[in-house]
Length: 187
Figure 1 (cartoon, rainbow, N blue to C red):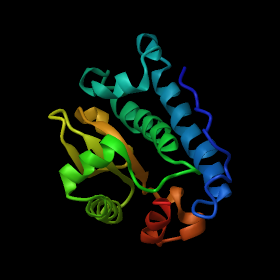
Figure 2: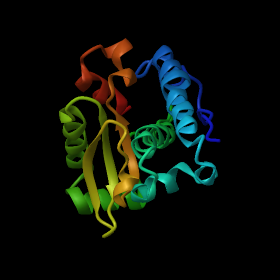
Figure 3: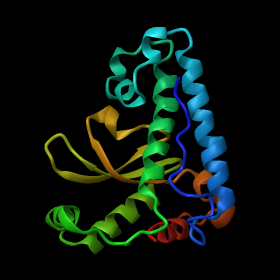
């Protein structure tokens, strides 16, 4: 059975940028629903219940047709959110260091150029989804977005950074002002 991970910080730790009520609902309701629905989808497929969500998503072509979309949607929601909680930090340095900084400069020219591209990608994601910084199978860095709960690992990409731009991630505090949420998220 898949389980909801414990957050690495308290619900109010990201204030004033992301409010405690949003974090509580986002984690304990939205993410929990993805976990519950994934477990329900796998109920009649005992052979898949012990497989990690990452491995389920890495090879969706082999999933049984009767649960394939449910695993993509709910497994993706579970994986993406689990990764997202690890990206967030109340003690962010706000700028990369070391090899990540070097790779961003190599790939995008500067951190500021990367930040602008990532922000634009997150802002322009039509409807619900995610913006990602990923490492491709060719070892290149790429910024792109996915719809709904689609996950880069299903495309053979390694996530390095993400932002959830579903309205449930920001609507209580920012309402329809996604760009304000994204700006605050960088903190």
